[in-house]
Picture (cartoon, rainbow, N blue to C red):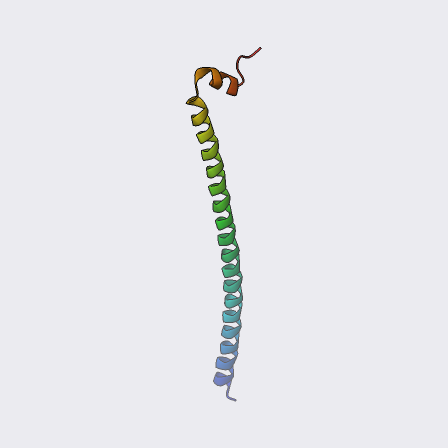
Length: 81
């Protein structure tokens, strides 16, 4: 093999190794992104459950406030000693 051909072959091999390394890093980053996206979905689900719980408490409070005053005071822990 001539000197220029050897140099081109060597450079091609180095370039292929660099491409392989970039591909490996890209695959790792894609995996990290996938995991992060899954965690975000789980987080959003938990937020949704928390909002539902808060809405439930708000509804109970609203219903309690619409009761007659005597029952409302008892429900809210009145009279206080």
